[in-house]
Amino acid sequence: MDGRLIIRNDRIETAEKLVSENPATLEAVGEVSLASGAICEQAIRAAKEAFPGWRWLEPRKKREILKRAEEILARRASEAGRLIAMEKGSPYPEALAVEVFGALQSLNYYGENQGRLLRPERAGHHTPLFFNKTGTFHFHPLGPTLIISPWNFPFLIPFCDILSSLTAGNTVVLRPSTTTPLTALLIGEVFVEAGLPPGVLNVVPCRVPQAEAMIVDRDIQTVMFTGSVGIGKRVMELCSRNLTNMTLELGGKDPMIVLKDADLERAARGAVWTAFMNCGQSCGSIERAYVAREVADAFIARVVELAGQVRVGNPLDSGVDMGPMATAGQLKVVEEHIADARGKGARIPVGGKRVAGLPGHFIEPTVLTGVDHTMLVMTEETFGPTLPIMVFDHPDEAVALANDSVYGLTASVWTRDRKQAAWFAERLEAGSVTVNDHMYSFVEPRAIWGGIKQTGMGRSHGPFGLHELVNIKYVGTDFFRKKSQAWWFPYDRSLEGLMEKAITVFHGRGFRARAKAGFGLRKEWRRIKATSPLLNYVRALPRILKK
Image (tube, rainbow, N blue to C red):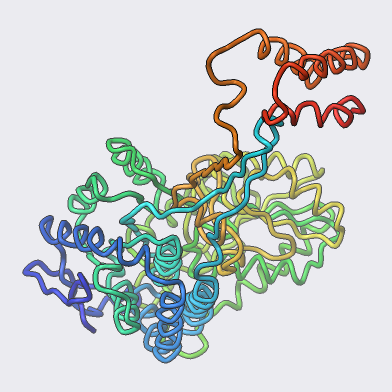
């Protein structure tokens, strides 16, 4: 595996190295070069110099590049899946289904829609004075984007962020997590092989001081960060120095609400998969479940049964459902949350301890009952394979419990009743709400991703995500054949009379007052030329007076 940096499509080896470790075996996956401050500056300069060429490159040629990247990734899909399994710990089938297939879908979506998603949009005018003008919203790229990506989805998250930035017309410097750098370098290889122009994408694994220096570099126009709340606040502080545009995705404590009419088999299977997929290391995982009392016992029994069937082991072995935690540090956090809940009276019908006989960062899928909001496992992001279940008696109570969090990323409702689903969807404080499923929206390119509260700010993915990465420019035009506008200098009695009566016509109260002002406005009109834009006021009088 090539661990050299990618700058201007060249591979660069450095003196300082990092060994990437397999979390399942604790063996080395490969050695990676680390970028110095000077090399990080080279990457930024490369992105800056490549920006004009990429910005103005024809959409057709961009589509061709992304189509080739799609074909290359499809050909190298097994290689990518195995690398993700070795470096991050996802079971190989899961790496293919979630990360590789998700990246291919995004490549296809953005490739097919180059030049379409950010077309100029007409802007109508509400003010009658401006009816002779036309307005348009234009979407212009900002320049080099710094993407700081996490280790939990080391392929899919940076891939989607790169595609969004490239589609917006920006160039990219990718600083991946030092836990999973080889996976990020594979992304760079795919784009280099596809013919992406030199400097448009640069991949530079580096230490924290070098990453922070890139954030405050004046040539970086946008920072896209995915990670913890604490580091996100640090990124925000650094971005404030240059008022750098940014998007922050900082985690979640996502709730699942199971109503009494839910399909319990579907809900139980959905809960187990979403809580334990990726070993629970997803900001969109179900981290707390609230279940109607009428069905709680049956739901819990089925969840416990299914959780006990989850097969834990080496992610490259056949039949494995859940691999190890990606890092020893995150494993410790999970154990602390479980111990805190147990100490405060929670019951653990399945799981709760490390997996014996395996050398890596393995822990059992864990279901907790008898939990409440005094426990860390219900209030802080666990980011591990835990599923705490709490009982509720009334829909209002379920909403209050679900919203009782500093996070607001996603939430799900499980019910057969469409009206109930809509009622909950309106009241849940989250960036996305799904019904009878959970977390799938991340791999839907037309959806959005992001949330509120300490989950972060901004959105990624799809058309709305692209708006976070561009300058939305208003362009107004006026080709009316008039040498002056009625409201320009010099101010005179004619303008006074027109505006006093127009204000009453358009904004006054009572039909009689508005009608009287309307007739007076017509008299004032006779004193000015019919070519004035104020003619629109008079022409609009019958419509206005009818309101």
